Length: 98
Length: 501
Image 1 (spheres, rainbow over the protein chains, first blue to last red):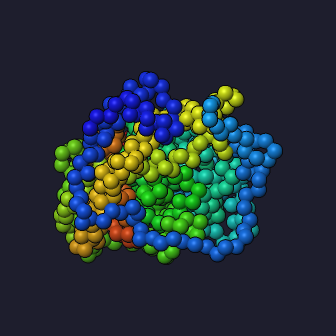
Image 2 (cartoon, rainbow over the protein chains, first blue to last red):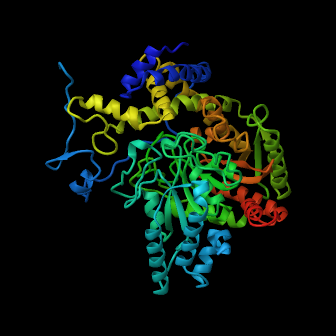
Image 3 (spheres, one colour):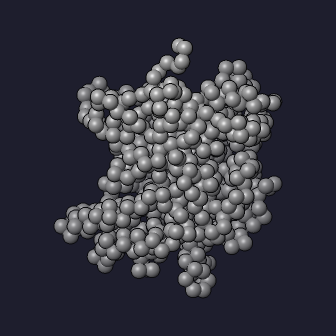
């Protein structure tokens, strides 16, 4: 299967990764080789094989709904790129024209 | 001083307990060693001498006051820079987390601190633990102490190199597809991936959550088991943690008894692509285990051939989801926040600038494998292949107590040799990936040199039979030490400090 530069650009946009033209040109053929080599698994198993998402047979684990100490606000904000009024300051949410 | 560096962690623990030496002396010796050799080895991203000496003094003071201390109290340790630890940066080898200081300790970090181990610093790794050589680190490449032109394995190459360079007697790693075992193999050290759920992932920066598992690294089997005992066991903070007693790994390492054990050599993990020197050392090690009383049989795991392909769909899928948290909003790097860009644009600019090439490759593959129209064909098929691989293990463990293979198909390759060929790099994990897929315990143990470079033997045991991994590893160590006059890294020490033994 062929993976075009345009398709890689679309996937990168979905993954919120800005890529340069150079990176796109390098990535597309690399990804194609990788996907070709892993494609064999698509032929391995039939409908009778159950998918396995996890090594342990798990059910949800719940703890008691009790109030416990948590990190102080200043600890949480200590590593923030930008803080304003004891909150995370983020760039504007809407793009131009939205 | 050199005796302190060469000693095992178990010996150091005993010497400190009997008052022959203080933790400060042991810690200072290792800090001096790091100062002397790490400019060439480059195992550490961060060393905090002051903190280490303060921790050593605290242990010495507690001992002087008559406190009951564990067998590793006062012993120095190097921690892979993927475990959160307060008061120090955790970078995970990525520029996107440069300078970030976690607000809490990983459970494994906390247990190491509670046991009185002295943290020397944080070790280098491939960015977000994605790689087999440390060449994907956002900071620098670690060099293999056996040959500094070669890779120390990855992702935990820093931890493995620190052990082989005698910069630390113990280290921590994480293993998603072989990141503990492959570095152990190519540096002549010991590394164990516990049963999935056997050690807590809380506070360990996630790569692929259904595969990641923290584990111990050492130069001897007993040291590794002692560290395993410290870090393992149920943790309510990790919902995938197993609430069951920790297997008696220390007892198994001490007994080193394989008599009556039936060990299966996996037919599919050998042959084409495996270096002749690796296969030869592996066969000799299997013979040594037979001489120690194990019964050796051959087993077939036909679906292992799909493991690499399935892994490179499942792992990137989980990566693309896990690494979405690096969004430039709450911590870490932020690029382009100049008023002209929206939050989404800032995210994309930050992730473009902060992630390295391999991380981008994997996120994009994962995004593709999970996208509508491809999900069933790729991610869904890979999950079915995973079922078949687990089934192979189940069948093999019906007739065998543990399975054997080389740990990785080749010895340490040259730095730069595989950086332009992702598939060649991925092949380093051919033997280790199946155990991550099935979640069983596995470890790598030194079994000799091929052309002067270490070779590792992998032991795979059923879920929660981690003690068997240590029993086989310790028996092999005993048999080979009888021939070599010590463990494999002792030969490296001798080579570097006057005359091969």
